[in-house]
Figure 1 (cartoon, rainbow, N blue to C red):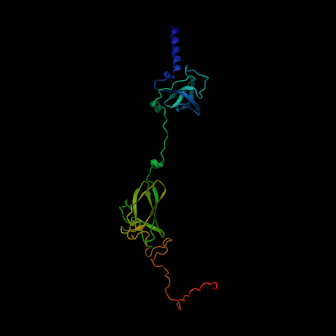
Figure 2: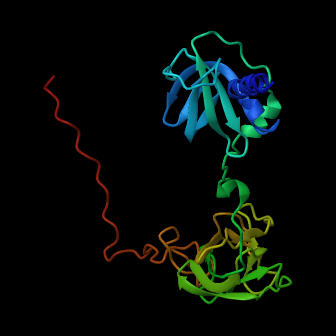
Figure 3: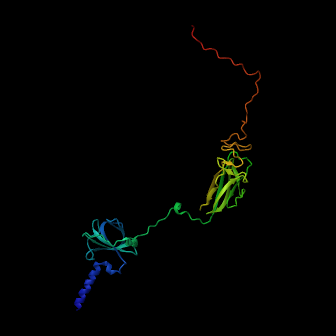
Length: 289
């Protein structure tokens, strides 16, 4: 009786070694069967295109007996990879030279169980840059047309300020350029127009028509520039390019801002003695007849 029991226990032990799935509770290990393509750099590659990471202590065993084998994993060897879903690594590789059918149990569910989620980081252009509301130095730079008077004051008017035409006054830094710096919280959005202090002298387009407000967003940065160009003013819609008004600043594109007459008109006075009498040029020399 004891001898028969010993034989039964030995048989069960051999069966457990031959079928590793019985050594673990059902569902804890996953198996994949196929032909090896290569085993390199800690991964087992199969001809099906699947690749699995090998555990540092993975076991190589004979496919039929489950015992250790002198056969080494290599190309064209058939193998059964036993994977642990917890670590997503191959803990055992059962190999044989006998052709094996592909494991039909390797379904989409199995792939999801052992798949490693890729670490995808979206580019800032796609996901956007988070804003913290930090203080950002925003520089407003406005370029005005040549017809702007020298003593003109230029302002920024925003929707956040209730469209006050004199909300932000700019300082003249060049003949045709005004500037102002304000510290605004990152994440702030607003639209603005450029005026000369009232809505009767607001910027217009090159065609003399009203233009859409400039949109601006304060990014998460230390400093930011907000440029704008005024092509004409609403109180001077003569068209572009405009005739410069008296008092305008001369520029390379408008060297004579003081009206249509030249600065030094040519003299119309008759010189003393009058103008010389023109004489016709002598006829050219001709050979004798």
